[in-house]
Image (cartoon, rainbow, N blue to C red; front, side, top):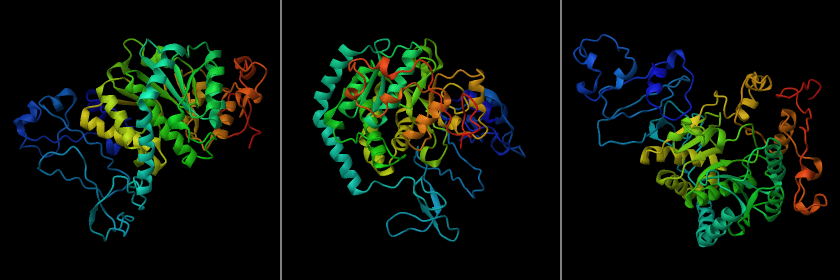
Length: 473
């Protein structure tokens, strides 16, 4: 049984629910001695595949290779196990015409099988297009600038960490990235955290413009504006998911975690569209004897279990990384693959691709907290049609560590959702403003910007809400 196997062997991915046609794991044994002892004498007499439970199925396996395979959805899919020099990668063939540009078209049964990208859909959409030359050159320019300024940037970061903040347990830094267009979300995080009495001295905001650095400091957060690498990043908010401003911020998120990792710190990375209900370090990742202690990297489940994010569906907006050789190599490689970020307009897509390779290559220990768990909810739970999780949340039946307002079109949606959720605390006079344009006290903006109670407002009758919004659109 699948649930029995995965209770013994932790494969790290968010496991799909058990269904009638996917309830068991098919075990293939390379020789008789690797089979369960009880089956070795009767292996040639079986008229059907025997069902084996517990440790018995793997009791004689000195090596175990695991392949996750979606065999549903009406696919005429075949799996070939070729006796050959061993490979740890899967080659994907599809009946698809070869196009003049070197890519492939949609599934066509009359075509021969061709080797294709794992991101090619049956409709012919390529989710992993190879980066264009212009994209590669864009990546080279970014990397050249990064390495030319690396020594100076690291020295500046060391000074900020020493003088302006306190890493949690002297080893964990909470990393956030923000530009001025997203600054009200950062202010909301600061207001909400202060209101709940959370210690944010371990937070370091990588500001991509000076205006945001000034605001972060005035809200009591340590901040660093890296003009060498972020000087060309737009200060405006992304108009939508995946536009040029969005992509520039995604690359900034790759740079900042690599820098903190290079300094030898564990790190918690989080987007600015997050609120805490428990302290994610003290009460979760850094809690003594917590289950996460045995993993190198732990991610929130994005919820979108699509081919782009297979097999981990790891959300790149909230994750924890322990500092060691495996994770440093992972983040260094991700930095080197920045062309994928530029080409796909997705930090997350590149991260999962590199993650998968490093799990195989170095044994990187990864865990994704399943979307059906209650600890780390986000846009998936917010946008569920039945709204069951959010109903439980408002009834006090679930106690999340954080809430991540992902799966939104743009910042305006996030703000409205937070207002309706009852998790918005930023006064109007602080929205979209520079520090010098807010109030009389330009050094401490907490009293001016932070509301004592949630600034609730109805916007959508079909979204979760702290109070009924039946008259909303």
